[in-house]
Length: 465
Image (cartoon, rainbow, N blue to C red):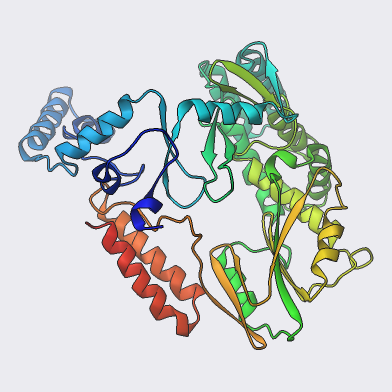
């Protein structure tokens, strides 16, 4: 697959010319505004002029506007051909233009096929169709709950959330969309629920800040590739050791919520620092989480409203931390010395992605054991490779009794980043380059670093032309 095919995956009936494909700069590309940002600049000085005489303030604002109009020179970062391509794609009503689940790839699919795939997801036991929009009724219940808890606890943040919900009556109903998993057969969609500006978005953010410190404290926990590589560098393994990786199939929609809330209650009860983060007690916190994941767990697709009856919705800020709470409990149950039939030499986990080093032949035993913890609800799939295995964005290679690492990119990764000519501060471009170099320096062993740095140079050259 060449660079062009990686950047744009066309799954539709629409035939794209080579020019249209080559000119693709990604969905994050920002065209240069045709007009200067006068309102933004003037409004940014409003507060500073609040004590200035009105006539003088108006004169200053006029001078700023005039200066911008005089000095602003538009330098378009897309040409007429590219504008025409964008308009043509936008005018095709039977075409969906979206991004892939992973890899920074632009995906084109037929709208009818996209809707069919979404509807097939909604036909599962995870979702239930509703007769009407539940936003208004659920908002009233949420207000009663928030006001009651805010009055009882005098919690300032909860009071602000309740006050905002009271005055903002046009809360958005969350909407469902799907991201194509182009790395999997038949290109299934990953369901994501956009909850921005929804009725529970502020409450979910607050609850997340309360719960998050309870997680990430296990030895097996991996926050990023730096943590993972650090654990491998000092490790010595035997010749009969094998590397395996496994993950949970559809984790978010499979989370047993009742069990997770029970685990959360126990963690909160034993947290001696809880009072430093909130005035809410464990009972009230769990009650609010339960509300967000049950009564408040609904969305819209096209003109139909649905409730999610199982698991946590991907796209809601509270869901990842609840997934971590559950996975830590799952790990505790699975790797308990008294019940686990194997003893991994090393076990590391990032949410539901697990990496382990075992003796050869123990992989099937471990997989069967993991799938017996919540039979029929939590199912893991496993991959075993004797000498080389990817985990996160790290390729781990077995060389003798040591493990070496280098940067790993999925075959479907486009190697495309935000185009250099996109309308954004120069610091963003510098940040992209710095981040890629820092990642290479952290992950790569010295013998692989030069190769990866050359790869970075080529990738950056692509987005600068």
